[in-house]
Image (cartoon, helix red, strand yellow):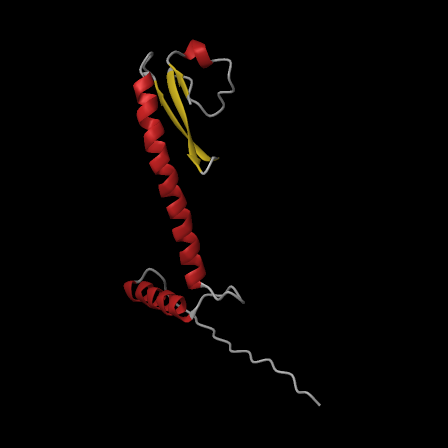
Length: 129
């Protein structure tokens, strides 16, 4: 965790991507299970803006943010797994129906001019002799 209250304190650090007008910066790691999952960077054009108590508050908030980020990643993974067949990785019937319905709605509202649907059911089997 870093509080730099004046640009002179941090001007020798790699500042790629940081606007030149930035004066005060506050950097807090987002840590979950002893692993850094991100970094929260706050900056302002005002000198001597951030104080130690800002750092303590953001440290607490970053612990909640780490949990929220983990929950969001878990949600996205669960959503992906629920929409696709585990073997073929193709969309399941529910997702296909929703995409087809959305396509017909776009056709009906004039957002698209035509729609095509191709469905294949391939059955492979082996005859033992």
